[in-house]
Length: 250
Image (cartoon, rainbow, N blue to C red):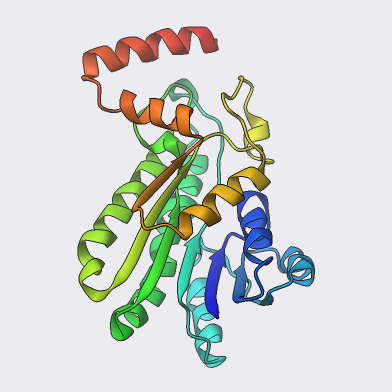
């Protein structure tokens, strides 16, 4: 039985991933997020065994308390999936420091808080699986994406750091980078989102990726790979293209 700790399970992509993983009775899930009521509701839907452990990834004490609860239940974690996320649309002309701090705190520092608790156990037993859900928005700076892209870029860098340091302990690290997924957060966007997919579609991609041997998996294929290629362009060419795209977004 694979024991999976899923952080960010109450809404959006995380909730859909929990449902997808919960179809497999060989999985045992620990569901974490701030909203205890939503977690209880989700847990009751799943075929796989599951328990809830509410936490706030933005609060170090909350994360530590949740980990102590997991340890006290003598639950050994095989896989951590960090899917907690926050997004606020923003341009550089209208910077909201509080919102940027929240995005970085939830999307990046929250992951570090969680990993700081679990990684020592993984190192001790010389096994474990870490999955970070990032975004193709983290590949390079984009128009109208101040704050969010920076937080996801940091998460990409963190995944690379972890893989460099932890592979010698037999710990598998994966980075999963979705494109646009329809959630209550992306509904805030006022522009057309290319290759927009549902949370259910994204969850199927994510679960398939978790079962693969790849360090990074990105989707949808065409759009995600297009952005990956753009990230390799010289700055002069890239910024010229971004100016054209930003003009069309206005």
